[in-house]
Image (cartoon, rainbow, N blue to C red):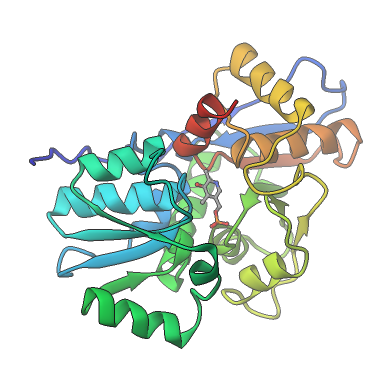
Length: 304
Ligand SMILES: *Cc1c(COP(=O)(O)O)cnc(C)c1O
């Protein structure tokens, strides 16, 4: 099949944001609209793959869940580059392909389902040899696309924020906020900030200590201007709560941005709560990164 690759829209805009029930002394909030970069390579997945050069690969492989934004982004990138791609999927969706998997299939990607036990072994050397023996030589990109190159891509986003802040004659951000899953996005934000700025990660899955370690592997021990809050997980990854869904609906119907309950909704919900709890000063300048999340919106419309 043939593809026209859609170019990325960069730099993504930095736009003001507020909600009508915020206190009068709420801080200034700006949204870095990485959700607008590309219709298929959603948000931070575009940043994370920007330096991953797959053009010369013979066969690319990666791993993730049935709604993974990363697999969707990488599958699209491989398809537009004419590189064979295999997605290893946690669990068996053969009888009920998710919208993400249907896209992969229509782009000619290969899908291989893994049992939960196999998936749990994904970091082991036995798993790597299993991959080699079943699929032959391939370029393997870890879950979420989280590599050192991914962190470099996120650094470019931080440079755009500085550039746009100057362009709008705004004060420098005091805080950066973003959702955290595999940690590379937050790591890039920490590396791209200075010690007088604070980076707050919003955990979207249960993983106290685990998520901190995921971030720490990409940054220096001297980087201490960051923290992850685990207070807004809402029961677990891709799990929701009536409060979270109501909040997403409110943002989607009353503002010009769209959020979904898996990533961006949880991050914006957390920021909303922290603002209402007066966690910030009125003089603070917060930049929340809209990391995208096409597949998360599809979860929302597909789950009963
Ligand atoms: C993958 C993803 C994240 C998590 O980013 P990590 O670098 O894995 O922490 C956040 N938001 C969206 C929309 C994502 O697709």
